[in-house]
Image 1 (cartoon, helix red, strand yellow):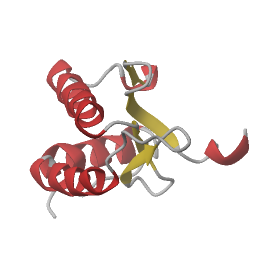
Image 2: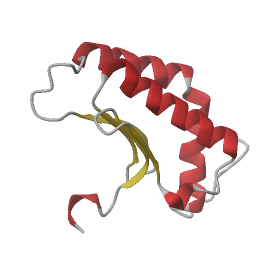
Image 3: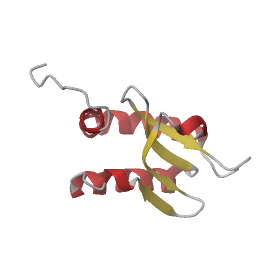
Image 4: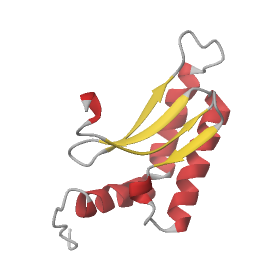
Length: 115
């Protein structure tokens, strides 16, 4: 399985192929969540280029990963980092909810609702 065996891709967008991907394991998410993810990813790659992937780590953290094709002169590295920070703030509730969903349904954790 290689390096991805303990990490699960949620979704991603690719500016080179103009494609959006949602892992079929997450089809059960509410439509508005899937729509928001798609808009977020597509707007990101339209804005700065490259490939954006949202990946769940083993512990349930949801990370933004950015890759580019070799020596892509169009990719905006600084813009990329700024936009990810902005999204992590603006979409904090959505990202937090996705992490809880993942921990419950994929990791089988008991979530204490009264935190």
